[in-house]
Amino acid sequence: DVDGPLSNLNITSHGTRLDEGLLKVAYTNVPYMVEGPFHLDNNGAYFDDISLRDSSTGTGTIKGSIDWDHFRDMRFNTSISVNEVEGINITEDNGEGFYGHLYATGNVSITGPMNSIVLAVDAVTAKTGQIHIPLSGAASAGKVTNLLRFTEEKTKERIDPYEAMMVRINEEREADSDFTVRLRVNANPDVEAFVEIDKASGNVLSGRGSGLIDIVANADEFSINGDYLLN
Image (cartoon, rainbow, N blue to C red; front, side, top):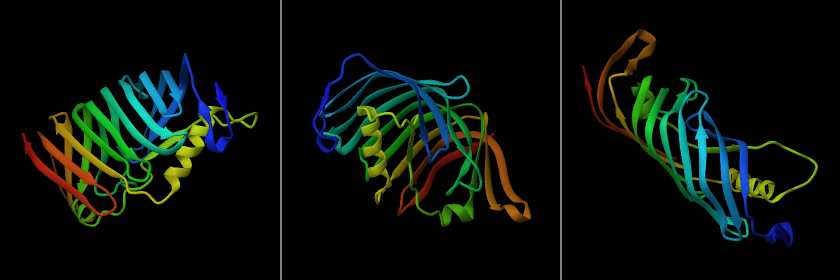
């Protein structure tokens, strides 16, 4: 049920579903298909165990909410559990501080207002993968921006409550923002690590091993810490 002007909508929903939705985490460059039940009211959108899958066999579940006041002042309070999901697919050209291709099992949280979102990941690597750490890039990494990108099927026929929500999200996302990414990755020997001291001259260290790596990236900071033991 919807009433009121677009600037101050009153809304309630029952039995609503998201079918074949596309969610893309722009920082990690990985798209996901999402579908499942949710409901809306004047205080937010609530995810009732929405399922997530990647382009391979990885799966996950989304819970939590996007809180708001009549579609204003949006704030994420969302948790995602994943199993062998494609987590990072960052190319060298797009990587800020590191790049690579990883699958993972673990937990993800997306919290905070639209202008200060925190993406936190606590996961164990799954399947085979690679991670590249250019030392020069880690020392001079730039800003992390445009963390979340939501994609929807566009229509000119009418504006429904979901489309109104997406308009609000995109407007607030495009405003000046401070995104923070916190990755805690427990890597296993199936992942090959490359430390690029001077890639142009072939000065690259590589190997397989295990260890716990913490990565923090935002507008003011890029750091990699932890222990990675080569086999």
